[in-house]
Image 1 (cartoon, helix red, strand yellow):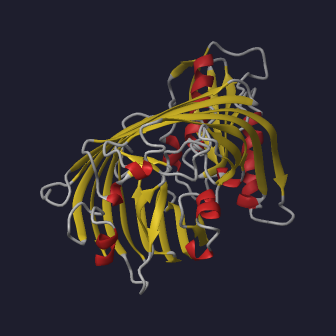
Image 2 (cartoon, rainbow, N blue to C red):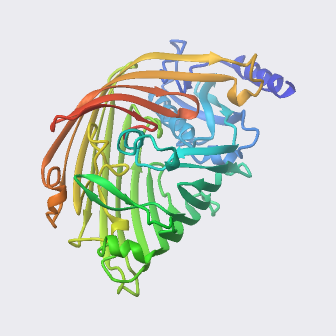
Length: 481
């Protein structure tokens, strides 16, 4: 309570200095409340409140303005609007508000008010092992043995430096242990970062291949462990500008399978060995100017990556993969926006080990209406489109029930979406068992309702049709692109 009074006092004191045009994370209108605005301004000081755990330099890193420098007034308001989105996309805060306070003829003080999220989140793992809810509900007959359960512990702001620490221990359909740690900046200038991941899992039931454009799973009579996998990776990040990121990842993967797997599918590893070991390296460039990384309504995303599987020793695997993602979001008005996204994936070789097989139906590449299918091949192209109308935008105040400030209000936004997707998968092997959907132009379309809730979590309810006569209701738990 004392802390809140301190913030209130600071707001009142600064507010008495002059007019208060502002920009908020929800309302990006930056028109000043007074008509007497300067043509240019100089920022004298930057005040930050609400960052009880987050270090100040983490927030200052996202600012495109500085003190003791003159800016054109309209340009300055545009900078504030963009900076506000960048700070919010750190995913450290539930709200961000930047307010320029005119204190002189050409001078302003800037107040940045943030509301922090709850950073330490222990949670119970209870999730489906299948590709999506519809796959589990329809193709797997709602089999509850195909559920993963366990515990996950996440700290999304270690030391207040935006460092992420994840630990997950999982049982059920897939037994898994996963540890991740990322430090976004390891240098004083906040341009270089590192991340480390270690992962181990084992399965008694695995997909062997696909037939009739659906996955074929296998469990042997003794219910032996059929697949064990150990992987580790180190990622280096370079962020020279606000919106452009460069990633270099070097990793090692070791997969061991039961001999019965090769009896069922001799081409599972493309060799007669039960082990597949390789080093790999991936370079990724990402340009990201989305207003909200969880559910974008404005901006763009461009990502290009190239991966070399097999370094030094290439007897077991020697492959190159290239990926492209290009998404554009147009905000037509506060209630309407249009989103379009192109994804493409290429393998250079004519065939791959089944553990590397890609296609439509595997995240993030899908066509709505084909969620029940996997369409596998060496090249794929998917173009997704959605026109959305926000028909509900509200906040529920539950502070009388939940005293924690991080959960005292629950936002809800509902969008009605009209969707149209199309794509193509090139299978150079022309496998007859999957010929119905490979090497053909595919179309899917329909209507949906997207709900965006607390911490930007997304639930999508969609009814989609495809050009092969399929139609179904689908449930998903993340934005389509």
